[in-house]
Image 1 (spheres, rainbow, N blue to C red):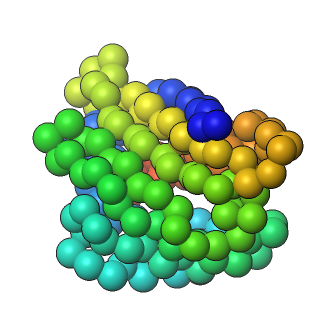
Image 2: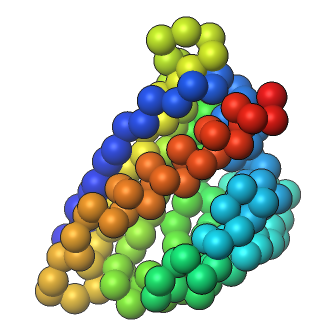
Length: 151
């Protein structure tokens, strides 16, 4: 049975700037968080059907790699959905499908990131959701910090 976990994060960068960083995550994430992301290889043109092959760094305990496939990409509404199709996470989850959307913030230089992951546990035990939320928050806060110092 599918379940979901959501988190909303207020960030001090414009939605357009964050969207650009997300679309360039293959080069930016390893630069911003090298202990988490060793490399990200993109197979495809970045649109629906594209595969991202991620090699994780030593900070990602219990995971060495993952492959994600972009399922939905809406540039206008700054929304993307992808499914994990390979990696250790699939030993915990049968289905792991994050969606995130960027929404306007309090002013032109801020935004709210809405991140929801639909998942189906691989076994009878439901994994705790806090590590999933924490990983999302830490990743996007690191991207925010990077964008604020390089603007």
